[in-house]
Length: 56
Image 1 (cartoon, rainbow, N blue to C red):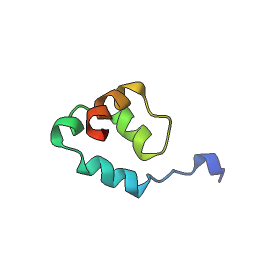
Image 2: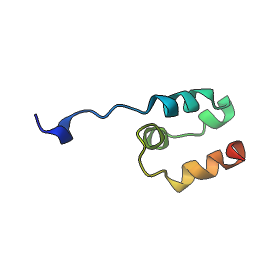
Image 3: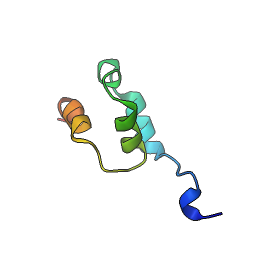
Image 4: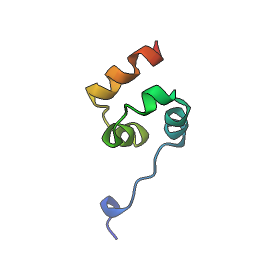
């Protein structure tokens, strides 16, 4: 089986961070944004905008 076909696992620390976010922020995050965050991909600008107040 080709390694690119293997399923990548989410970063457990990032999953925990997403779970700890306030509901008002979690409800605004799209599936695509959450996936990028959990899988250490480039974060969409839209996600950074939603998290900026929480991160400060």
